[in-house]
Every structure is written in C-alpha cells, then in structure tokens.
Length: 156
Image (cartoon, rainbow, N blue to C red; front, side, top):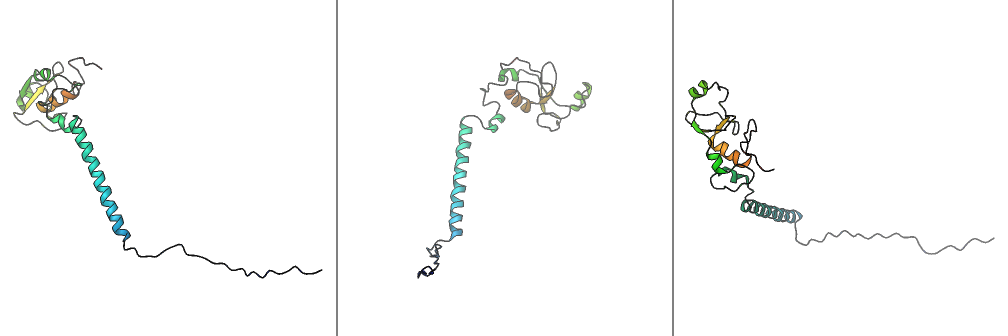
C-alpha cells in the first residue's frame, strides 16, 4: 500500500486589523459635550413650548391665584355667589364668644389668622377661611374645604 500524497500548501493564518487609529482631529469628549449642549437646548425649547401652551390655554396653576381676573372656570361657584358670602375681620375675642377657639388656622393655606384679617364664612356650616383662600378654592371646587357642604348643586 502506498501512502497518500502529501499536500504542499503550507497552513498559514493571517490576521487583519480593522481598528483604525487615524487621527481625524476630533476629540470624543468635545463631541459628547457638543451633543450634550444640543440635547439640553432641545429639552429647554420643549419645556418653553409646553409652558407657553399651558399658559395660553389657562391650564397653568398660577392662574388660580388671580380670582378676579378669570370668571370663566366651569367647575366652581360663580364669582357673584362667592362674593355674596359673609366676610368679617378676625378677632380673638369674637372667636372666643362663638366658642370656636380651635378655629385659629385657615384650613386651606394652613396659616394662623392674624388680628383684623378679612375672613369669609361659608353659609350653613359656618366654617371660615381667609377671604382670598376661600375665593380661590370655591372658584375651583365649589364646596366647603372642611365638610364638603356645597351651597349650590353643581352639574357632574
């Protein structure tokens, strides 16, 4: 028997490097910094657009502080009803006479009443609050903040 012919092709392995180390003049940190700046500006622009949209459509929560300027809120009480509620100036002696010594703090803003501040009282339940606090509350909610008594049935 004869031996099989041997191949004369040498087994060589060649490797090529695909990683290039050419210097094109760009710094990767500078590129990331510029990308970061553009993303930050884009996000800021989006926030400005959203803020402008909410402000223009009356959805900004700060519009609730100007009670007299916006009379078109549909969920609360009409301003003429709110203004018809009794107002008085706070005095510790008056509160003591009415046996309501525990009512020395506005339940809306959580701050103590000061002498001669103007308060507004809810009809029927007789809960009272800072006038501006209650006016803002009733324009939005339409019921007493403590007992939820609603002086006017609101459409649901």
